[in-house]
Image (tube, rainbow, N blue to C red):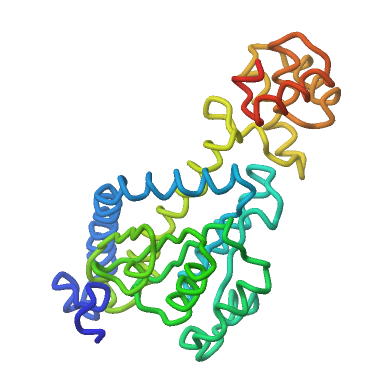
Length: 294
């Protein structure tokens, strides 16, 4: 079956890969990488549909769950773990599942991606419900672990999204939305950590970032809900407040303290000229959207 997959094809531009000079190979590889964004461009309407689905679910108390094996699973996990510090989400709000468990992130677990019993167990383990959205990621589009997970989610009545790099994928057939970014044959045949991996990462970036915008985690182009876990991020928050309110550094520093280190609250306090308590009330009434709270 692999011979029919675009991701398993041989790239005619690298047939003499082992004979190429380093710079020559890198030039070809870079040219191939550029093609990925064009492939993603073609799937933007479906990506937009997926974002709307995720936003609707999250507003209804649902979660965004990524599921994949190998590189695809690691990409989902990477996107999930970046959401709490960037958008101040709960660790349980955006979750990444990888075939073989968390240890598979750093070391391959043989046979895990072919085990169709693992996915339902993993989803049950995180109390997956019909309110959640499952995003299955597989470059080939046929990974048994991912297919099984999507089928299980559908049985529960949950919405499902598939991200693959082949047309008419198996995971696409069992999903509500099939995002199929055809990135073409890899420069190293079958090494889908390359263009396919880049394509998957780009799509996951879009899904999570656009969804967080949709639930009020952003003001302008500022990530006003970030967690201040180190000195760099504290300084970033102060600059953010300055940019959003046109205030001086000292005022931004003062209001960040008054707002209990919450940039979003500080911005509303300054712009609306109100107390911390009233800013919190306005944000709650506005479902977290700074612009509406102001």
